[in-house]
Length: 210
Image (cartoon, rainbow, N blue to C red; front, side, top):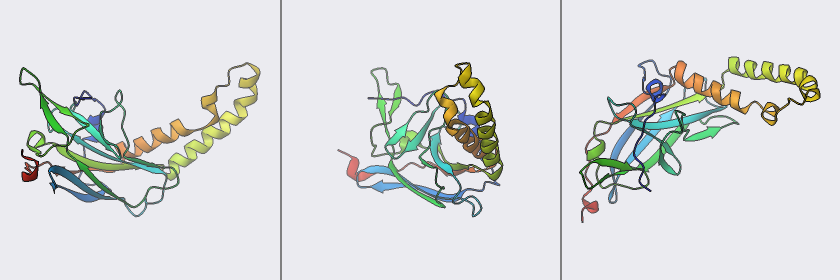
């Protein structure tokens, strides 16, 4: 299935980047056989390593922030209705480093010459993505976030008998996963844990020419 890189308003926050980012690392595009391939190495701060959290890797157009895709272990994908797509989630503790390798998707032209990007494919060139910005970042459940989760759980358990008596207790009240995910994203967006890693260069892989 051909998927165009579509609108994603929230990526403007992810795309902001900052010189004071706590995340560090590097990225490069080079040939791997016949495919133009992205390699990313990223590292958390020492203080954040081991905390519950998630890694994120994305690429977006330099001026049109609605043109964005997130990388996952299964390949590139569009964001879901303005949501961030994690590369990996780590409830037991985020690893201090992330190593990523992924082929770049190819451009597909329709009968009118309009190009979209087929996220399920691999390209022999990065020319159509030259200038795109690759970003990496992570979010963690901070000590303050853990206190919020604990406080909410205490309040919910106190309120449970009354909710159940009135038939208003819902299954989503049984865990705090949604709050944890929100706090992880909050730390990514507000605490400088995302940075520019690469402006995609033009790379042609000779083995991919037919």
